[in-house]
Image 1: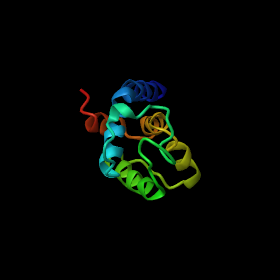
Image 2: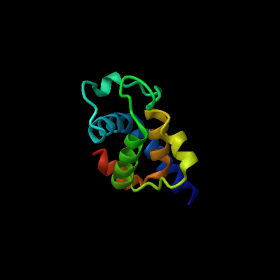
Image 3: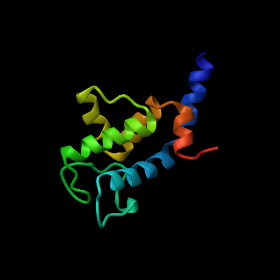
Image 4: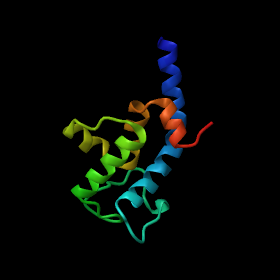
Length: 111
């Protein structure tokens, strides 16, 4: 069983770069952010409260719904959500650890 958990963790770790790019595109689309490309969003930049996206708390709700739908992750704990939504990297780390690996690989179109 420990080997299975280690394999899942390794598999999801391998998916993180692709996941970060997917999340950037998802955020731009579901929050209807104009004039910003995924390349303009740094992995460690704060998502809320300033440029380039100027996201609001309403955008956070939109992102949460999209993440729950696409990845089946549970975002019920409000204090943790704030931490997971700090940056694209933090969000990707959370999803890689919480999402079902099969669903993650399917959404990201990984073999």
